[in-house]
Each structure stands twice: as structure tokens, then as C-alpha cells.
Length: 236
Image: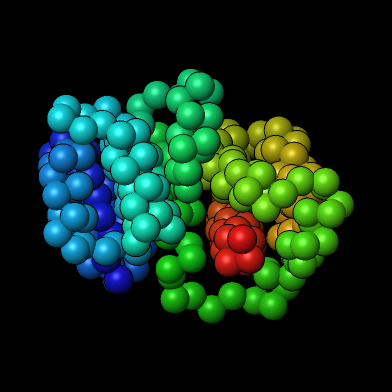
């Protein structure tokens, strides 16, 4: 399976390629900037997913995203923006333009894994994918499928950030703070109809959170959110 990595900074590109490679067996194709990527795509390259830097000369990540989404054969490809910017306006603009999500430099392995979750050949438990039918969630929340996809993508980004934050909290022995963060993620699962993921987040004994157990559950919850997003996208 091909993964396209686009970044004019060769070091950032190599780091991201290494993280992708650590997630599973992928055929990684690199492009030195947006113009190079577009030339390869026009030439017939059809990656399963694209990770693209936001700020590049010749053709920016946002401009490449707009071209990809307007292309009849490429429009469905998940497009993940890579940025050092964390401002809400940038994230909102990318989401409105059709981005599947974003990752922030310096990269975290779990941020990358979130967006590759649908492509990983991993055994998952039945409980993990236990969830409402997307149509039920849409009626309950009173929204359309496109908005639910935005929510699920945003939740996956929250999970990636929480993974890093919780590791720091638990390393400092901040059990109560970690529990509060997990409770917020649990509320998100309930809202989005991810019943199995919600149950997993409530499975910890009070005051006995360990980094390894929390990381494992968050990886499961991330895959559940990605799986649900795939079901929603397939129904649109």
C-alpha cells in the first residue's frame, strides 16, 4: 500500500517516513514539495493516503489539498496536513477544505498511527468496534454525515494529543489529572456512539492507572474511532 509523504524539509520528511515505516509495512513515496507531488499524482500515482506539509514553496499543502479534492480519481484519498501551526483557523480551514486531519511538528508516533489505523492489519476485539450504527448517531445528534466525520476526525486528533499528555501525567504520578482526562475522552466516546471504546476507558481501577495500560487502551479507542469514520465515509 502506497503512502505519499510531501515536505520540502528533507529532515522532517525522513522523520515522518521513519514513523510511518514503524507503524507497519507500507510502500512510502516521497515528494520534495507540493509541485513535485502534484506532478507525480498527475502522472498516475495513486497513494492510499497522503501526509503533506502545510507551508511549502511553489505549491503549498493547502493548495495541493484543493487540487486533490477537485480531482475525480483522487478526491476520496485521505489527506493529512503536517504543520507547526496550532491555531484554530488553520485547522478549521484544512477541515473545511476536506483534510482528513492534521499532525503537528515535532511528530509523535501515535499522531501518525491514528491516521494509518484504517490500513493496519491488526487483530481487534469485538468490544473495541462495538458502536452505534452511524445512522443512529446522526439522528441522535441531529447532524449530517459530513459533520460527524469532522467530529470523528477531531476526536482522533484529541486522542493523539491525549496519548502524549497522559504519558507525562502518569510519569509524574498525577493519577487524578490523568483520570479527569480519560473521563473527558469517555464523554467523547459516548457522544459519538463508540460504546466499546467508552467501556474500555471505564475499565481502569481507581488510582491504579499505568502508562502501558492507558497507552494500549488509547490505541484501541483510536482504531475504533477510525473504524467508525470509515463506516460513515462509506455511507456518504
